[in-house]
Length: 331
Ligand SMILES: NC(=O)c1ccc[n+]([C@@H]2O[C@H](COP(=O)([O-])OP(=O)(O)OC[C@H]3O[C@@H](n4cnc5c(N)ncnc54)[C@H](OP(=O)(O)O)[C@@H]3O)[C@@H](O)[C@H]2O)c1
Image (cartoon, rainbow, N blue to C red; front, side, top):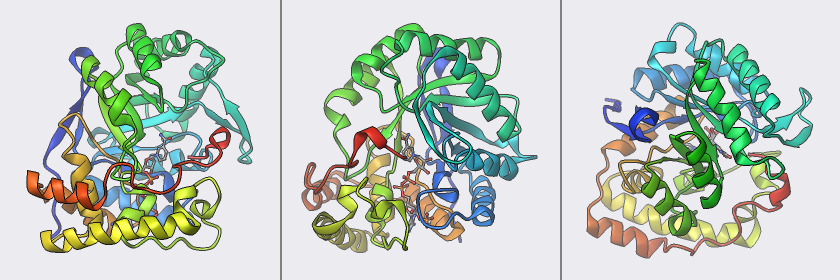
């Protein structure tokens, strides 16, 4: 029988608190970057996710671009009340996909929010993130504009993505921040030094993106021709690095076999074990993968297994940077 998610996590505190299903669903790959987009598969996966209690959905205006929000809007039509809906602005793109840069200007924030609401077919967003910090606009101005959206009832909670510790502090002083979304997995642990302590000090939740290392931690990573992960933007998923990293996944898979779960489930259970303020959003466009990932919530890891995992995939063992050219981050 397929498991359901019955546990929740609370991101943020006091007025900024937002309760979400402990595991969310990343919708990006349904529309772009990871192989052939699959609208029908995406809609079916979102419907199944809601049935299984995975109600925390993640999208962004730039995925597609714009088509992912429309897809999510279609999938949740008639079920809006079941969903904790998160989207993002700031990686500006034209309709044809051309990248226009990072934009955190207040007038853009307002226009981007209205456009997202229209595409999603909803009257409010539960969580609205700045996707990337605009270095040319003081964070107080961007978050100030985001706070006006809260006052207007268009947005319930605010988030940042890939922000520095200093930016998080300044943003939170402007308006309470509910969550930081950033990459976190057995392969990406940089944030443990500088970011995680600040989040905990300020009571801000963490939403780990790419918790499966963009798929490699499942042990079933096999990108098709034209998949963006095969490009130089993702050094750790290519060439010699991929060989080294695959060996780490093999070691993880051996532990998973002993635990009676899959490597992907073990990788997600590890993320879930990092704190009650952590709610990962593994991405998939397939019902089968979603159902497997939901099973991770039932995998409990004691200290001995956590130590085994640490030994098999030591922090910093991964080969290659997570992004190649940081000036052209796609996703
Ligand atoms: N804030 C940001 O800058 C940022 C950046 C990247 C992503 N995100 C968000 O985070 C979400 C998740 O991250 P992600 O999609 O990059 O990476 P991920 O969740 O680590 O991995 C997704 C990949 O793993 C595959 N997969 C998922 N479950 C699987 C399973 N059980 N067995 C085998 N393969 C499985 C998926 O395959 P299929 O595609 O074939 O289903 C997909 O290719 C995204 O959807 C997006 O919403 C945010």
